[in-house]
Amino acid sequence: MRFAAQRARMVGGQIKARGLTDKRLLAAFHKVERHLFVPEELQQEAYEDRPLPIGLGQTISQPYMVALMTSLLRLQGHERVLEIGTGSGYQTAILAELTLEVFSVERLPELLPAVKRRLDALGYFNVHLSPGNGSLGWPEFAPYDAILIGAAAPEIPAPLLEQLTDTGRMVIPIGSQSAQMLNEVEKRGGAIHRKEIASCVFVPLMGRYGWPLEGA
Ligand code: SAH
Figure (cartoon, rainbow, N blue to C red):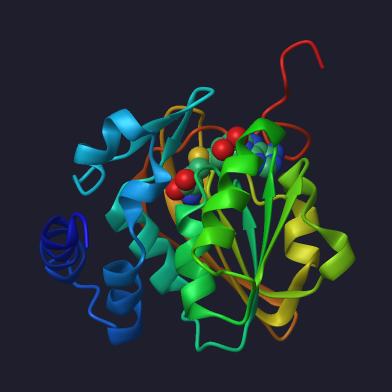
């Protein structure tokens, strides 16, 4: 298998060594071939400890950040998960490994055909993709047990909170357009509990409940 040694080094050195040791989580990162989710000319760099450009000004997140966000959702395998910001589809594939069903919304429709091809080829038939403004969530299939937002928001978009089950969990980078704090959000007994986890840098979540689109 191509890049198997690099992938094992990524899991050991970037994820496990930084304290994420859940066996199912590590198995998912061993299995999903990250190099298939980056442009061909960057495949050699796919297992490095950083985000990479995927075109249209967007990035595939750093492997550790994908692992950290995923771990905060504490998936057991039976959940329905909403992802906002499909991007390359790498985080989507990781979620598909760890749970029952994944719904993923991406603002840039041009990114989705490649994602669909990749996920189909890898046999992830529990993933549903949709173009659109993910700050509005995906009401049709709500509520979700977990919601992962892969782009930076000024605040938690209200529709996403509404689409979370009563015991649901959310991870979301909140802050300015240039730097954010990863927040873990938990709904319990009708109340919202928020915890700041780590500083991070994501591309902005665009549109209503995110950052206004220029000229819109
Ligand atoms: N986890 C992804 C990261 C993608 S980058 C990966 O590892 O590949 C963030 C993505 O969010 C970009 O593709 C961007 O187009 C998308 N995005 C930004 N604003 C959005 C919105 N309002 N709704 C849906 N997707 C959005």
